[in-house]
Structures are given as structure tokens and as C-alpha cells.
Length: 176
Image 1 (spheres, one colour):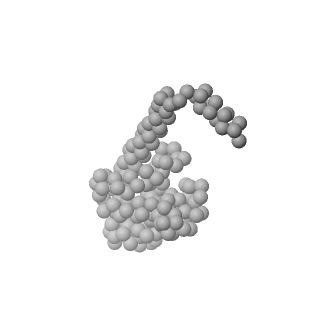
Image 2: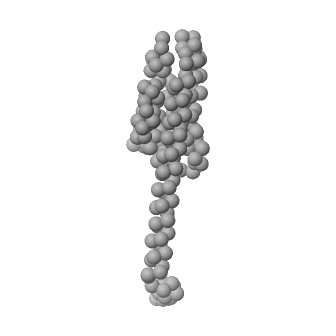
Image 3: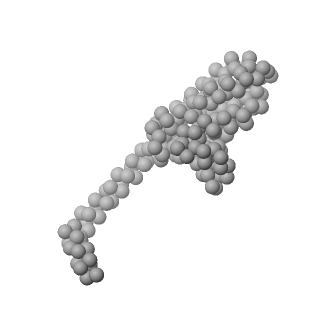
């Protein structure tokens, strides 16, 4: 049996363990792992779908550019949550260990775990691409926040005098 065939045959088991590992990084991990409906659980659905696509690309040994869409979805999700950069991308790296464990657990595929160098190198490249995408997402968030602050300051600067607005509120309260 060749490595590609073994990875293809074991993909469901590997991806399922990878999804559980990733979803356990969330505080509401029990809900995310239990609820399979993507509409009721968009976080779990996005993680499942993205990791399934990423694994498929990994076993096909695709170029890094091919990972952009599923990685982007995953990093957009993780960048708006309370994860540090390393926490956001760490679950991607876990697939190397999960794959090695799954292959080693089967007598037929155990010898193939020695041939995982190219697969693990592809995972490393995907992790680096994910980090770049995470940073892009965080930059967008900070730019949006800066614009909101600017917009808010512009309202204060161009709007009515703050003391006059306070007087208006006081007058309204007296009338009641």
C-alpha cells in the first residue's frame, strides 16, 4: 500500500480527530463538537468544511496557493476570536501528529509513517500561509477600528458642543 492510498483510506478518521482537536480550542467546545448542523453551528461547520478541504489538498500535495480559500475561511473565523496568532494556527499543525498516530495504530499502515516527510512539509507550508492570512485578517480588523474611531471623533468635532448636548439631556429630564 502506498502512502497516498493509506492517507486517502484513513482520511475520515484523521479529519474527524483533527476537527475535534480544533473545536476543543474553543470555550464552547462541547456544543461545537456535538452540533453537526452548519446552520445551527456555523463555527463547527466552517471548521469541519475547511479542515476537510485542507486535508484533501495535503494528500494531493497541492501548491500552497491552493490552500488559500479553506485557510482564509478558517483564519477569518479564528482572527475575530480571542486567539493569539500561535493559538489560531496551532490546530493546523496538529494534523501531522494525528496522521502519524492513525497510521501507526494500523499494522498495514504503520511502516508508511516513516514516509510522511513530504506530507509534513506541506502541512508546515500551510501553517505559514495560515499565519499570513491571520495577520491580514487582524490588520483589516484594526483598520476598521481606526476608521470607527476617526468617524466617532469626527462626529464629536463637527457635531454640537458636548456641554450643549448635556444641557439638552438635562432639560428633557426636567420636563418629565
